[in-house]
Image (cartoon, rainbow, N blue to C red; front, side, top):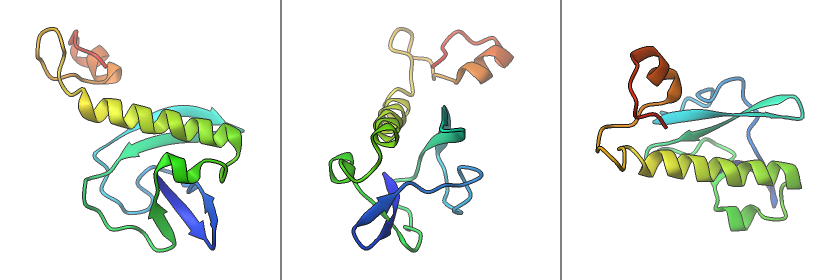
Length: 112
C-alpha cells in the first residue's frame, strides 16, 4: 500500500485522479466514496519509483495507524487489486476476463 509518511505517521494520498502522482498504473478500480471522497485502488508495476515523502507498506504495518473506516477500505482495496492481478482469465473457458464496462460495450460474457 502506498502511503504518505511523516515521522511515524501514515496517511493515504488524497488525489484528484489515480494517476496524479505520475506513476504508471497497470489498472485501477473505483471503490466508492468514504466521507464524500471518491476512493480508488490501483495496481502498479512490480518495479516503480516511490514518490518523495511516500513509501510502500503492508497492511499489518498500517494497522492502528489509520482511522478504522479508512483501514477497512485499504484492506478491501488490497484484496481487489490482488484479485484483479491474479484472475486475468476465466476459470471456466480460459478466455481473458474484461471489466463489466467493457463487457457491456463488447457483449463479451467473461466479465469480472
